[in-house]
Amino acid sequence: MAIENLKKVQLGHYPTPLEKMGNITKMLGKGDLYIKRDDTTGPAFGGNKTRKLEYLLREALDTGCTAVMTFGGTQTNHGRTTVGAAVKLGLKPILVLSGGDTGYLSGNLTLDALMGADIYFVKDPAKTQEVAREVIKKYEANGDKVYVVPAGGSNPLGAAGYIMSVKEILDQMKEQNIKIDHVVCTVGSMGTFAGMILGAKYFKAPFDIIAVPVSPAPKGQKEKDVVKFANEASQFHGLGVTVTEDDVKIAYGPDDVPYSGEAYNKPDPVTRQAIITLAKAEGIMLDPTYTGKTFRGFLDMVKDGKYIKEGESALFIHTGGAMALWTKEHLDDMQEQLRANCNTTEM
Image (cartoon, rainbow, N blue to C red; front, side, top):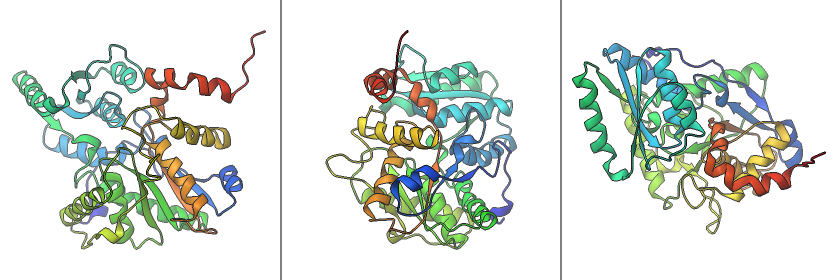
């Protein structure tokens, strides 16, 4: 079956807005800069995982599953979106989260709890899969059939969501009569980035795809992993497209202050400044774990001309997750900088 005709459920609202960042464009003075608002799609505040889950949860329903399990860190955006999608479809949501019980529900965990997810905290991340097997047995003993969604929704089936997102962007470019030379997105579990590379090649897009990593990684290994993932997805969908390392463009940032920061979810003042820049310029909120890091890289690419030359236009993919701003650890860490960023007066 052609990927265009692949069955899915309807979870999001499409097309997501593609808007010009007028103030950022003027601020940098290099070329037209746009943003794709995948943060505005549903369910449960949406984000990039929605496009993947539409295909994955179609399979869950078609195979008679009654519950959905997925994985991530304690503040996983993917987990929150999966819970929202599951309850929308009448499926029981189960989260197996590595990192241990925080003792306080904030950010995404607040939303997970509001939606009634069953949450299993795993103190030792190495035991996550062991715990998952035990949990599945528990639910199956009670008559449920559990569909397991991989971390990030990233497998060949889920990648269809971002392969097809390229077609959506191309349609919007035509409707708005705009030119885009580069698309910048996040790379974590690889489904979004690899899917967009495939989509760009399959639909013969006039732009390339550049990614910013959300976790520290040795240069070279991530590229190989993306190539492997993309070619498996291409074969799975019968796209007839081959991806090589020349197609995989990852911007790591300075060696001493990489875009990924020191760790996956560790508060980072440099990333926070990028978040503040977009908030003050366009009234659009990013998150400290994913999109803030990517937007920092996006700004640098435009400024230094390494990936995006002067006069070229670029599109930033907003993959959602702004509710991470309200996690306790990030709120605590940013108080001083927030106070300095605004005028507060008690009268």
